[in-house]
Image 1 (cartoon, rainbow, N blue to C red):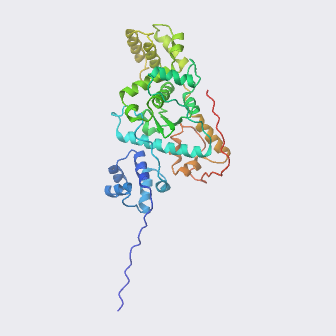
Image 2 (tube, helix red, strand yellow):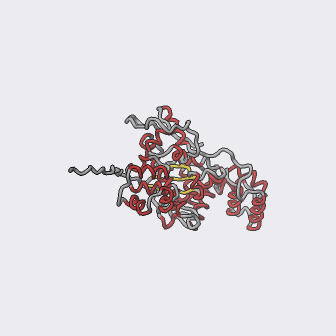
Image 3 (cartoon, rainbow, N blue to C red):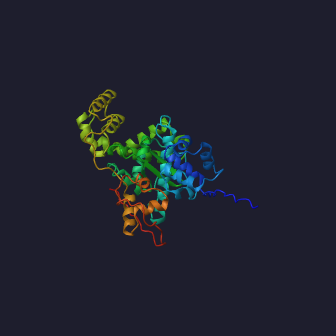
Length: 381
């Protein structure tokens, strides 16, 4: 008598994934393995095995991970991604900022660097033009960069445009990484700066100059690019770069009053506190006068904000021109995001909040056609 046929359950096929991409996506969302386990219902051991490559997840599991982490399924099967180097990043207040916050910001920077790689394949971008000045003091280093870039003693122009014109790739930090303030890093021979766009315009300009100081004076040497001494040097560089001594001494009187400082800060487009510090640094304010001015500015709200400050935020000229040029070729932001296997929202978080086009999450993927790459010619403003 024949035995009844036993029905075998269908096997679910595994999906080839790139383990490091799971880790990158998890860090981008600021999650630990335990938190991702609770979110997805997957065991901690399974997630650890996926990230180390000991086992491969099933296709249904990849979809669960993609949904939980907010990435397209295709993101997890792409090639290895060169992460921004952990060493050499000029983190501020590293000891006070949770490691997961730093990891999330670094992961966001890594995704922005991938966007840069894609753009670099389509366009000719300015070559980096930064001197390496590890020995001069901050004041001298700032003067040398200003001289090299032909700024003289005039106020610095739009800082984002200025950095981009000299080959620095500038992106914005996403809203979930704003605890970090800003950071800079060398990725091979390419310098990157990531800025917090939720600060006042004046403080954003100072952050840009501060990160420039790190790139110029500290390079990618982790021994010198972070810590209290490096932060003080970068602050001094930013102060000297934005408010050159000759210009300030030629314009500001000794013992300037608060109202004079508030009127003059628009010349250099800096915060009132930054100008006050610079006046003290140049011996135009005594210690007592400096403390008195700071106290009065603080009482007027200038320690935590910039009342009646600049309104026009400095945004990227390169990224604006890139997406304008792509639009003329019929390539939408959604197409670029699809090419990178990220969401449009993720990409927009890197772009200074520029309203590029109406977001469309579907459509063709942008492809290169081998034609000559359009040049981006930048002018400082």
